[in-house]
Image 1 (cartoon, rainbow, N blue to C red):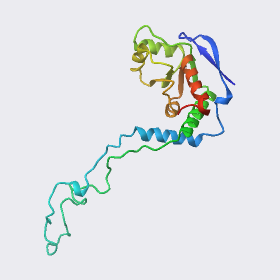
Image 2 (cartoon, rainbow, N blue to C red; image 1 turned 45 degrees about the vertical axis):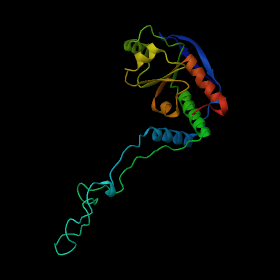
Image 3 (spheres, rainbow, N blue to C red; image 1 turned 90 degrees about the horizontal axis):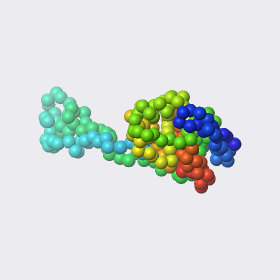
Image 4 (spheres, one colour; image 1 turned 60 degrees about the vertical axis):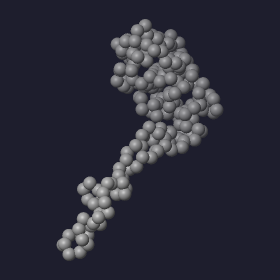
Length: 214
């Protein structure tokens, strides 16, 4: 069983939370993490790059010059990919880069990524996160009180308007709900700050269906 110290917004320890070893995994899931991250990155690609093939370039079918007798290379049409202004040979076309990642693979990847953060001591737990005003300096002061350096992933159970507005202008800070956090985010950020309720929501995800959501 792993124990995490819970801090208040001034950086003082106010308790602890336990994470059962049955929710963590260390001996498998490496390939699942790779597959989940590749799937997430591919899904983020827009796939809108488009080029004109020779059949789509405007122009006639008239030969630029006769076939023989000019001393120049044979040419059949001005839309040829070898000509400037012609079509593109084997260029990109609009497509989807999405790949299917099974639910069990996604769940195992999330467990493995979360387990690595626990074992590395990269998780900090905050008793509660609320701000009286939507001021960036207040959120920056909170991170300073907890001695957390950016970049940092902040996981909450629900998004408070003041907190969301205060955090969005800080570079290297990503605020996300516990229900939405994914494997790629856990890997991208070296430090993770969770509220007590946010951590409990993540643990609930891990305990459901043998490992939680992706």
